[in-house]
Image (cartoon, rainbow, N blue to C red; front, side, top):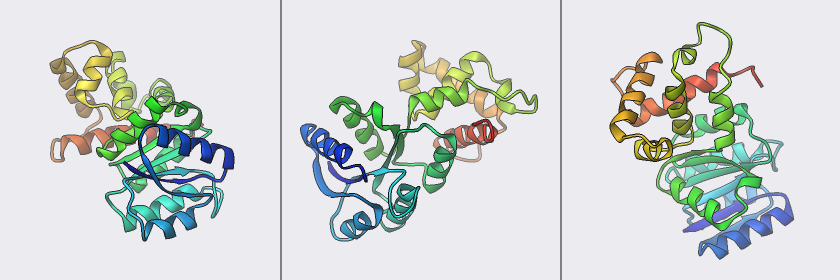
Length: 221
């Protein structure tokens, strides 16, 4: 696929380019900051843009750049890279979009296989969240008894974690070694316990379930 890169660290930027090219992707633009990338992509089409969260034009320039790119190119996938798995970053990312978007740790995308899998899923319209972040958030429920997520069973929490990673029902079933029917039942229970009514699409309710949990974790660090 055609990939654009914005990363202010020269060494990591060149490493990304090498990985992408080794995987057979075409790097159509490579910049040290967001504004030059936005200018480049106004002339050159790309399937996915890789963005460092902390880069020019400001400390969180990757997020600002993404907002501009999503507005100008709604179908372009966005992959955010960071040294840190932070829930407040994830909340802002999901406010930018809930399709064709991802947030991964830099240290976890250092192989052709992982990077290509992440890009393929984003290009297909999925949400890809760093498993470490999803796991930490889902397994650290607040003590507040009013937190609806606290009503989930351990298995439902496992399913929600995998939903937060952007996995499909089939993907969840394979990971947990259960049937697709069992996953469907767990997902339905999650929607019911979180008060997500069936008046929206299943995909949208999946996103709302993850967002509801993340919002419940704000302030926990």
